[in-house]
Image (cartoon, rainbow over all chains, first blue to last red; front, side, top):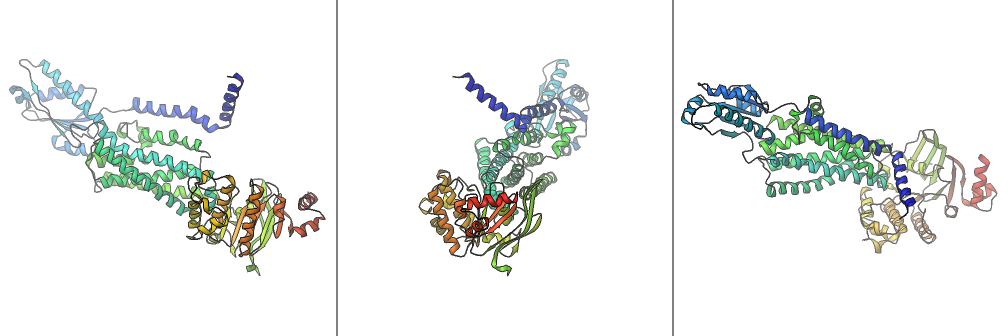
Length: 366
Length: 237
């Protein structure tokens, strides 16, 4: 073991990095960006789940519990009409609504109360606080009530999913798309970079091939791979992990295919800005991680701080994730306006990225 | 009689930033001729060849290849281009590489002929990453000529190639020229220049002299090409 020889290697390494400004920037800027984003997302996340309260109780008990719920910090309550509740769950303005029926107070005389709890259900993260808050409110009211124990039998209904709907069901839907997007992107950017560095791209450019043909050929090739991968991911998710799916499998497929095509073209486009595979891999923390954090996979977009919501709204992954969740969790089909928007936006990004990829080739050669 | 020229480069200039890679170069190559572009590294040989395949556009002057003004994608199916490095897909076999480059140039046949010409037919199933450097160079040549181009552009095809293989490659070039293929080959190796029918000497982006090896030696009053080149280059600077 020679200290000099070890020092020579260490010194050479640091010298190399001194010239590679990009890697340095990545090393020191990326952690701040990623951690800052994460911190802002979690700390800045505004809202407790919005819960509507429809108090139809002709006695006093409903109002008492409603007041206890309003004091809860886990949820934010508004007063609604029971008849509006269903529509508000569907458009996403409420995560749940609770109905105290007209005979609620008289139920209490019989010893068993049954408030109706209607949950939106697609996000396990918001379902739990609603049920907890109700539980606490009931306990605090019950403890004040004199006499014998009061049985509570909330009538829980789910708009989407069900009582067995768990975190994996929620994340699974998004991850099916994300896995495909991420892996296809990495494979494309590396193989396209190889095409440049091994000189074969120059040969392609000196052949009658048109730029669009190269991009299309790449797109088709990787789409074939991506679709096989999608089948595998889908079968594993649905058959082995038993991820909840209420929608059309072909539609899930269609969205995955769009994401794969977007990823291929993003890879071709970004390969222009990298000279080595090492640099290509650096795009992962810069391009993929922020999109991942902001796409609504971990933190739903509506609970993000406002400035980040604006950013989320212009990222393609947000729409793809939302579309996949709509299909798998809510059973959406193409007649749904929200799914049309999601698919439309993803499609728009695909067109933009294809154009960007074609133009990139032109610029590189001219 | 412009149609007798395979390549007609008129007064072409090209610069990269402040560097003038080509400065008013005029070169004409007859059909079926083996033409050598001779000059030191950085003289502008590769720039000129890249212009002939439309990878670069001239700032001034005209480039005409097989009667088509460049850049022109359509004419490229009749042009074969072998780059300096053996540009191949390392994960494909020799035959798969040749077949691919044939296909993108519109040729579905001729793979066997091309591999036989470069004596790689026996190794056709070998993956390129397992081939020796010289074999890769030959495979690269097969990829450039599989579609039977009328014009073959070879950018320093024998750099890093051992003398034995160099002789073999030149035999291949002559066979091609004998069938009417026009060949333009760039080199800075003087004994290769001897094998060309005509030579263009390039330095600092300018054409210093043009002619057969004998004419060049006579012009410079030199015994060999190396000396001739040094004299001609010296007389200009």
